[in-house]
Length: 412
Image (cartoon, rainbow, N blue to C red; front, side):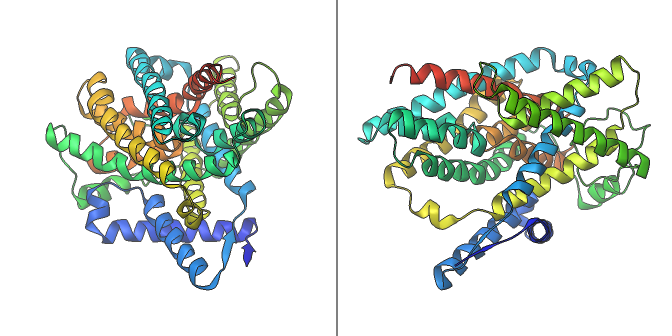
């Protein structure tokens, strides 16, 4: 029997999952030591409980997909609204190098998936589905390409296969990023972990307009000083971004510049921010954007993990699990030996490696959560928070779509 949660019950459940995750991370030294994000910790427990209830009594819960999508779009809009062109220029050469590393990994990810599928005697396109289509692409790309694989390439159950692979990636991306970064930081003595007292003091010190070197999404637990007027104005900006995203998604459908809705939400934020600030000299309230963006990030991840049906993962064929396991190892090794080294083998590079694990296996929100877990413990990484959100949300999808299209030409 399936129970459907409306938006209100979904929100309540997501908040409970976040509170559970915060409790677990604070109480369990292993989770705190290896920088497991709070939404991942709470969400996995909720998913396991859901699995047990389904196995024992046959009950399952379906959450509000519309609310989950809304929080995801708000998060991506917050990335765009935080991205003024002067800050983007700070990414400089590092952004270009990181894009090169990410692009090379997308090609490698698909090579691993297709090669293993061929060796295991299954359709090579299943390896592509278990490659960048679902892992770098996430649930949105899996849904968009699922129908194409079923209709145009005859892969039966491609949509379900894609969703299961993307779900696996979302979990693993949130698990391997923190421990990998911690391993790199300790091995190369890149930073010293902060004490609980230092973290508490920082979080309780309000971040105001005088705070230097402000970068969005760092330190999500730190107090931000905002007013009701700031909040109302910022909500209006978010509404404008989402309206733009909805319009452009429909307008571009079936055209050469068709993009996922979340990419349009991010693009809308970039355009709105820079037009208002650069042309009309309107003050943008970064702290309010940061508060709403961080809240949306946590709630989206909690809802995504809350909606997991682990029994569907159990139905995956053995060959697919072999491919996904190999992809996990490949991601960890690549982030540790390639991304980390290319980005300079320093603390920023370690945080970037954790972020790469997040969106290389799961999604950009997972990447940001991974980096937040690291910087909360070891200190700021402004470079990582400038590069990863925009790269993971915008450039990666364009690169990924291009690579997938090129590979499919060989199978037509």
